Amino acid sequence: MAICSFSGNADMYGLGIRIGFYLQWFGKILATWVARKEVTGMRLSESLFIAATFLALIIQTDRDNLRPVEIYIILLLTFGGYLYFVPLYIWRLLIGCDPDLDPSRHPRVRAGKMFSRLNFLLLCSVCVFQLWFWIGRVSTIGRDGCTEFGFLFARVRLNQRGFVVVNVVLYFLLLLCCVVVLGISLGKRWGFLEEKPKRRIGRVRKTALQELQTFINLTVVSIVVAATELTIAWNHITDVNEISSAGQTIPLIIGVGQIVRVLYIMLVTGDDYDDYFSGTNSVDSWPSGSYASGPVSVDRLPPMAPAPGSP
Image (cartoon, rainbow, N blue to C red):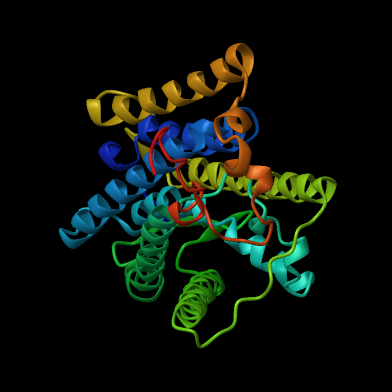
């Protein structure tokens, strides 16, 4: 079968949209080291981008306006930020799930509980869609006589059996991990599982684990960027490498603005995260094994001193 060139959907994965995603990914990684106060807002912005793109993907797929390879590209953008779970879980298996060697337990900036729950729901939704795509949608490739390619560290036919199996297994395992994590969380909340005592680790090891997490994130993001751009080139998709609409300039400008903000803090004002979260709220004062986040609970605040002259 031949490789068929076609005009892509620039409003879904045009150059401005892609660059906007890339800048947010790399900007967030940089911000965790030089502008930690910005990370919370950048996480929210990225999640909103993903949610909006994923919703549009569902609508366009329901209307049958996208070819399978286009869905694949959009899924790379919406799921690319989550793929760091793959090397992370491999690392956990290698260390025997030792919490003292798990970089995800010692983040530079902790996510809030509400954000974590909503992000978890979004992750599960995208995993379910991924499974539907690889099991049900990819099988339609080739009916028009055209071959479509994906990325597996080389050019691979999108409907090649081995490639499909790898992706189905990958997203099934990720979804299974999500279910297990949810079960453990509910078990602890309802008292069926006992909370393990929280342990502290040394600053040197903590920094090393944070650097490992950064390396994992950078590696995964770089691979996803390469996979996206190579997939577009391999499939001869046209009209998606120019910025010509507000739908592309908006994410591009937001991404550029975030990078400029992070660089400004790094070069001019400096990162005052520890001053902002001073005292008991300092990130270094939190238990290293805890998944708790945010400011100190109101239950732990000291009582107010009585007013002068009060009984």
